[in-house]
Image (cartoon, rainbow, N blue to C red; front, side):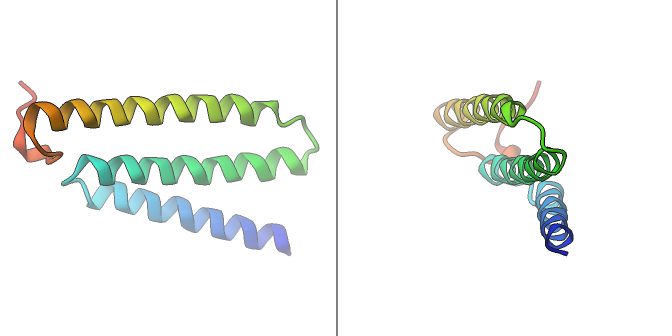
Length: 96
């Protein structure tokens, strides 16, 4: 029963993260935070799954390493965008 409750909470976290990612695309910071929220829910799903099958949790460490690299890359893009354009609006710069 507790596993089903945890899966429901994680599924709701994943859906909310996707809804924020799709609807709030004005600021880059909000998009990056919603992506991190989605990755956090995927981490919890992996944690439950690997604990349920009693597998080693080394895969979670690899997942966390890639997550940290993705977050650092996103923050570096955010900082460079704020330095060049002055804000993090998607409408303030041209992709061409």
